Image (cartoon, rainbow, N blue to C red; front, side, top):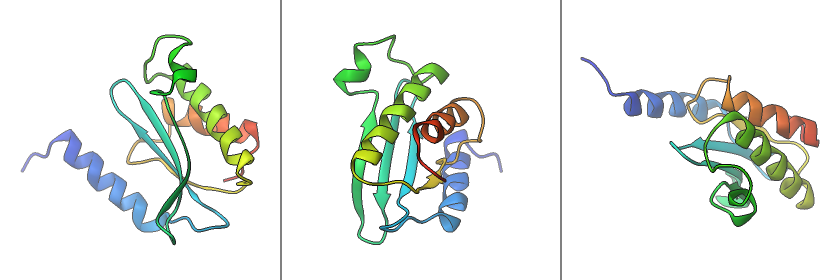
Length: 120
């Protein structure tokens, strides 16, 4: 029975989420890509609270280059996300790639977060 790409992505995401949970000392760095935007959240799954978030919908990121979900924008978002996390005293995280493969945009974002000082 053929499955849609969306359904396969959801299945991959839940496969990852079975293994990846974040708590107070190591929150989950959740990444979501839509066709045009990138969303990053630092989530404490024990309390069910978002500690910090960054999105390409924000004015800071919209004023720069074209607003697209591509590798350069992913690197910008990763750097800004790491800065906000460090401002909230978050140094160690668990990376949740959200059902995407770890290459391209996901890898660019992860590398930018690591360069900015977060450990995962």
